[in-house]
Image 1 (spheres, rainbow, N blue to C red):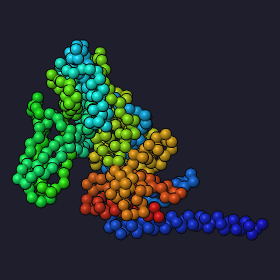
Image 2 (spheres, rainbow, N blue to C red):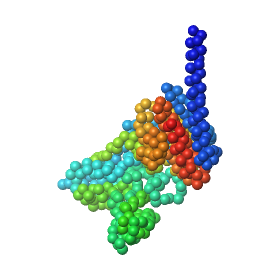
Image 3 (cartoon, rainbow, N blue to C red):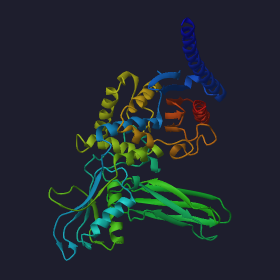
Length: 476
C-alpha cells in the first residue's frame, strides 16, 4: 500500500514538474526571441495566458501592467461593445420614401433617401434598393432627391484623428447615409504608347469630375499620382475633382487608387441618381440634403446582414470607417441624432463593467487611428478571456479576426511558420506602434495573448517579426 502511495505521489510530482519545465522552456524560447529581435524589452508589452481543461494560467508576461498605444487593436473593444449594446442580430435599414402622388408612373413629390447608419451599404446594396423601387412602376421623379442623414449628427471626423485631412480611403468621413465606405476606386490601365491611359472611377458618379493628365509609355512600370481635391466654395459643383497624372508602361498591370470623399450625404444621393437613371428612371430635380416629412410612403428598403457582417469587415481589414460608424450606432440606440462622444461613453461604461479601471486605460477613439488610446496588455488579454464566456457572440466574434497566412491583415504573415493558419488575431499598426492580440489553438491548449510594441519606427519590422516568431513558439 505504501508502495502504491509513493508511486502516486511520484507520478503527481512528475506531472507538476513536467508542466513547470514546459513553461520554463517556453519562457526561455520567448526570451531568446526577444534578444535576437534587437527590439528593446522596455518597448514591449506582452501577456500570454494558456487554457487547458477549463483552467487558465499566465505563461509569459513582460511589462504587461504598463500602458501602451494599441493602434488598431482598439477595434477589439469596439467590436465587443457593439455586440453588447446592439446584439448580434442587429440589422441596419436604408429606405427610399416619397411624398406626393404618383400619376401615370410619375412621382409628383420628392424622393427621400433615408440613412440608417449602415456601415456596409455598398453598390450591391444600392442596386438591391433601386431594384425594389423599380417594381413600384415609377419612371420619373418630378422633384428632388433629398438625402436624410439626420440619424447621426453632422460631425464627420472623430476629434482624435489626425487634424490634417488626407484623401486616402482610410480617412473617410462618416455619416448615417454612407455609400461604399465613403470612398471611390480609381482604375488606371495603359492604352498605346503616346496616348492617355484609360482612367475609370468606380462607381461612376456626377458627384465628381476626373481630370486625366496621364500618358502611356514604353515598358511595364508606372509613375502615377492620384489626388482628390474638394471644393471649398459653397454650392460649387461638382463637389470634388480627381486628378490623375504621370506615366504608365504599355505592359503594366492595371493600377488602382482608393480615395475618400468629403460629403457622405451628397455622395450617396448622386450615386442613387446614377443607379436610378441606369434603370430607366428619370430624375428631373436636384440632389439635396434635408429631413423627410413626418408622413411619407416607403417605396423600397434595404435591410443589411446582421451585425456580424460589419464587425467582420472592420476586423479582417482593419476598417476605420466601420469602427466609427458602429460607435455612432451604439449612441443612436439611446439618443438621436447620434454623437461620437456619447457612443464612446457607452463603450467606456462597458469596459469598466468588465474590470477596466479608469486609471489603467484610455479609450478615446473607436478605430485606434490616434495616439491618445492607451491599454495595458494584461487588461487586454483578460478582456479577450472574458469574451470567451459569451457562448452566443464569441463564435461569431472569433471568425471576424484575421487568420494567419490566410486572410485579412494576416494574409501574408507567418506563411512559413508553424503558426500558419493557427492564429486568429487583430493586428495594429501606427508609426512606432505594432500590435497583435487574439487566440492560438495548439493541440489541447488555447493561448490568449496580447503583444504590443511602442518604440522607434525603424524597429517596426523587427517587432512584427518577433510577434510572428513568438506565435510560432506557441505552436510547437
